[in-house]
Length: 495
Image: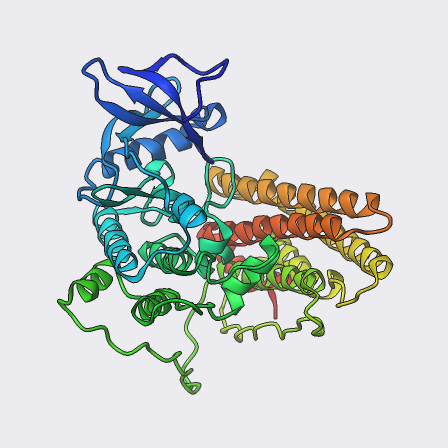
């Protein structure tokens, strides 16, 4: 525990603060004590989040759900004031080191300790998920090892199932080595399977001292989470079997936390690890009426997401120095557009609006051609030149798309659509800032150093994550029916 510093409050609610326990993405954690002498970990929410009305609403809802979490493997919620200035949350104080600290000081856990830890994590997640919560940042630092077993902490960033993958500041929640593929890609709302994936990664760390997707840079880690098989070497056979099941890429094929707990207690036998599903042959069918504007927005957003992740992965190849050629891919095929009859005038405001939406998506797809990242090379001068050219082209495309999304926000047909595109604009703006920052770092390094290039790649990865979030947000925007019909006649929406 660190002492209180200037600017720290003396008390929060009925808790007198004794010192700092730590700091996370949503606030600072203090050790507090009630007048009766009971200790608690008191999390005080950051001022910028406290001023966000939407965050306040989510936090109030999550506090109510968190009080329902029961069990010996979680730090219980004791008290909270979501409407306070600032909001705060008090949980059971766990007097013990984190799993990260124990492994760093004493090495990986032995097999009996690993079994107890795995059972504790499975029981903790079972309780969290039963309350309708998703932790979303399970990792060794958020697992405390007390005298009576493991305790999962930090419900300050737990979110109700089905919530947006964004924090109040528009940043993705999670720690790269312990994030699930769907969390990295921003491909859907968070759910319990993502926590199960994080549990598998945490078990690997506990058994070996490293994560299953460990790599030298954040970009490398994110790419391995999405594309590589987990490295479970050094794990005991039983623990490796559990981890392997938890770390399946497809969330639908992972076990639930209660299933893992049952296996470990011997109350059930785990089934064989399922093989990847085999795609079914194409089936001929009559076309059904579609919602073209919505469909095209989803397709372009998904394609853009794949492109930016590919770009980050290719940039990684240079940093890692793997000796392989650049990563290439074929964009996913676009399904044929079903025939839709529309009486919307192609020159109507609705058609022009939807046309801009579709063409802005096409701009992002063009990143596959314009944002080619550097190929593998050992020449710092060539790497520097290619990086700067690549980022420059990417910024140009992002600028063009950003201009379109600003117009879509300004001309939105409803306040809800305007708010949705406002969030998209925020993500594009953040992505551009990261790209420009990386560009400046690499530009200033002449000759280019490994450190500077790594920082540049990290900024590129940050931009990738913002664009992935933007893709998710575009998919969530619901246009009015008339605008959806306009997609059938808008020129830019025709495949």
